[in-house]
Image 1 (spheres, each protein chain N blue to C red):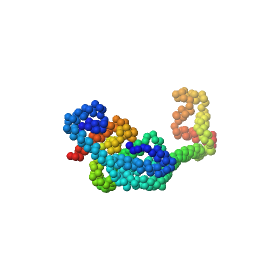
Image 2 (cartoon, chains in turn red, brown):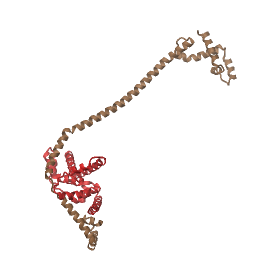
Image 3 (tube, helix red, strand yellow):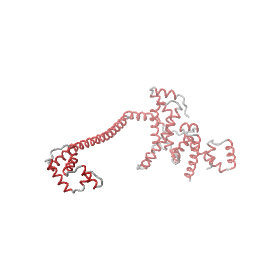
Length: 184
Length: 205
């Protein structure tokens, strides 16, 4: 997890009217926010949209933050919730949309990753992750990418540790099966 | 894939389970290959975990947010106002509809009262005038007209020289009924009209 030292002062300064304190908070956590959103959504444009939404929520709600959890956990929780909500809304929109899929694909090629090999590997994984349920995907990302403990994931998601372990197990099983299928 | 491999690598096994699984691993090459495969996958994930990319994007993140925030602040009121105005309009329309409906109901009820009052006032006049035309009555009040039948009946009884005794006699012959109406039942319409006209002519005109 990110070092929480200084968060208390930053939040209090922001509540006291210091706008630069908010910038400092964003600078500290923006990579975490973006990459979680990116792994969940699977592309840059959607991740950017989610990230901006998260910042907007942070700005509006930070005044009410009471340090019942760490700032990082709170930000992570907002990011996780916004990512899932975004994907659900997107799923519904796509279901009713007549938008050209090719145009969409071109649009989604906009990216901040320049290295082609990394891009390909990430795309391969994204294709697999897209095929597993959202909740399993979320636990897998938090556990494998962000290397959070089950206790930490539980704090973020509010789910029981047993349930999270089961979700991770099923996610891994499905991912390995899908990887095997792709190799054939 | 052997499910135990996932649990083993994720640290979800108890001490005993772990020992037992490690024994299995020593005995099975297939299981070892599967374990290696999963380890390789996890290593690949770790590599993807440290992508250094698009620093310029992160530099632009706060300015982009500030610009969006400013836009929201400028035009943020507009959706609120639009929402407020549309809600107020909807409420006013509903209120108008409800009030109008009540007023209409009240108007209908008032109009019904007026009509019934008019009928109450005009009907006796019409009746009186029609009676006056037909029988040469002077204008009579509603109560007078209402009593006219009993008056005529009385006159009819008098004309026939019916005494209480004779009425009683008649009633005995007609199923114990002493009512004048019962007696009139035996008279046809033409005869009754002729009798009434005679009475009126004699007694009133």
